[in-house]
Length: 281
Ligand code: NAP
Image (cartoon, rainbow, N blue to C red; front, top):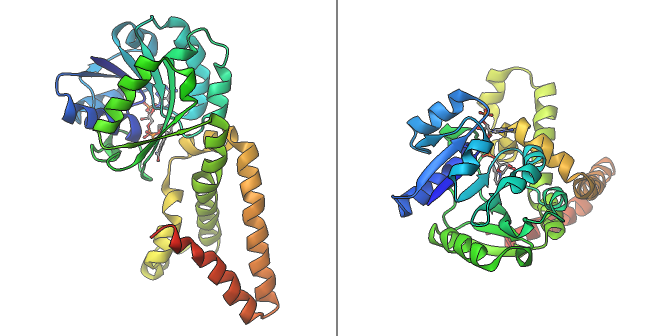
């Protein structure tokens, strides 16, 4: 079995390592923009074959896995599906799904495309960030499974289960709505918090000395790759703006309570927010 990764960073690289631990004889190949990325990916054992472009990889691979920014996936996917043969399967690991799926909705090879989103990640990127246990006990969302040819879907699900992941099936639009609140909004608030603090606390040494673990954990996501996150924000613009409005309303409510010195009101606001602990232990 040959698997080609277009993008061998955190997500593609980690998937490759997890698969190699299970199926040592399967061959992993990579495509990237920079030769230096493929050099690193080879050195780290993420891939053993390299290709100058995705067109060359398609001639070789059984599965082609797209793990590049979502705008690049959206651009590449229709031409890639134009080229695949009957036995090949294309999977994308992008963090948004609506735009990507809509773009190939009428494609004659739509049944050979599996829109998947591994709900796992870190704030680090590139081949160095990859590690084999990233996906263990995490969830792989597969969108619109009814659009995929059954045998191909079953083969993919089997591998995903064997690397220790659960599967969740969602519609593409539904996926984007949930992820706007659960993931994309958290990144928006983390980047904004980082801006606010950097604007007022320019002295890096003081920041390092005084920053507690609360600040570190809430601002962690702002270390993520802008090249990856800006396209996610834009692709999920409608849902993300809606989630930002909701967030803004709560933020403003707390601000008003503070301005009014309303201790009871603030306690009650915090109690309500704290209910998250009943869900996330
Ligand atoms: P990453 O670590 O930055 O890796 C992406 C790799 O793709 C980079 O090493 C880059 O290498 C290459 N690349 C970028 N644009 C390319 C293009 N147009 N053509 C070919 N290669 C390209 O990013 P990642 O975290 O693995 O994310 C990959 C995908 O997974 C994204 O769609 C993201 O939304 C999704 N995802 C991310 C997470 C997360 O938490 N990080 C979680 C789930 C899903 P070069 O420098 O050589 O271009």
